[in-house]
Length: 590
Image (cartoon, rainbow, N blue to C red; front, side):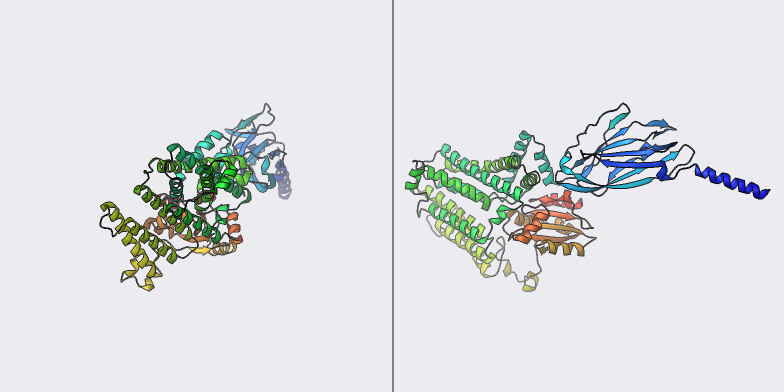
């Protein structure tokens, strides 16, 4: 009898278990991708099964470029203090893309949910993952809510998804993508004014001043303004064309113009300009050619200044900074050369406004013909020669440039009358100081010194050869010039923070970074926590171009940071020069 009762109890228990469904029977999810690149999710519920609203989660787990914008969901009901669905719910997930997303991209879409049976059984949380190929051209850049056919039982909610942090360059590119022409013009005009304060623009000051002075006596303020405006407009056109081409084809045109033969040619042009300032000849187009073109002798000055403005912008102009890089990123990713070109042109005008002021001042305060006129012309001639030597620094040794600077200084000091007894005390003082410094440069060059600020430092007794080789004003970087070299270092240093510096010998802002920012004592101490790599793109060869293209770098300086797992932290990228205090804060945030 006991055995019979036990058997009946066992059978009853088994039948009672059978009334509970397996999870894959209780919940049958179905996901599809519609033509608008929206993900439709339906969770079919079996009889007497319900699902908790708060347990339903949607997530994209393997993409930084595509994320969830908003979710359309059905209305839930109250059940024992919780929001649930008793009938099979359907959800519509709308996606959005980041600015730098182009073409098709595969994503992994994760669906999570948890529910119970009315019979008293609750199931464990369930997670399903689906793979979709998303056509990013059909996605919106903004956080706008996309509408679907409304029903009486559905309400629309906005999901607050943390957006991807953008680097300064990407933020600027996004500003252009807003399409607000007025905002773009004002923003990039301000960027241009800020860039005009950087050392990269300084060499243009003696150029524009010298060109105005070379027009000769009697030039009016109006004429000086007109010629200065021509120079700046030509400079702006050069930047715009070079920038648009760089954005469309992914190359750095400015770097392409840093080859030795180009540098030598332009240095020779500045020497020729300087000699004309010294009165050896008058540099202008032949009168016969001028008369054929326009019949006006003044056109030779206009044409010459326009040509110098166009060419000097490419050769002497600034290295890539965040505003310029942002415009190039926008052009490269959208192909919208018109709007990107407008931004570049406006930025160039902002850079040129101080140059116009300098040019007008050169015309307004030009002295009357006489001794002073000769002196002013000679000063600008010396400045032209200094620009020529500055350009040669990129292709000749430091020994040669120090000798050239010393000879220039010696000649100028003698011209000023360093040893004339009858000269003005102020002029003689300037001449003697220049003479002493030039002699120091000459001795320093012969003694093997490479420092323009401390040419005689090699004379210190404690500075022996063994220590010279180890002393450095800034942290030492491991130099690379190809993707392969970088990948090897990244692989070897997994688990460590890495800083990659894109630099070039012809880049003025790169030198400023090394001499000012990297040499700061607090910055040097903090940089010891990083593996330091420097991508040298001086030659702009194919390997260096490929390396720059891989990371979207249009020109130096650029600072990239990698996590311990070797992944690039794109939001932390720095383009252009950065002050030591600001850079230290940036490092501390990593």
